[in-house]
Image (cartoon, rainbow, N blue to C red):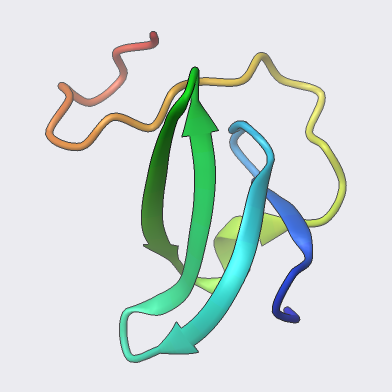
Length: 68
């Protein structure tokens, strides 16, 4: 991973921009509509290739398996 790269979750996600790495993983930012979101992900969860699955919104504290 490299700062500024555009990545996706292997399971499907909006395009995210890589920030930096710390003990929580890689910090990534993405937009849901006009709202800026951020989260931390392990290298193994990320890919630079857009997955062939429908994107999902990453919503903190959402029930597992619920799509938005």
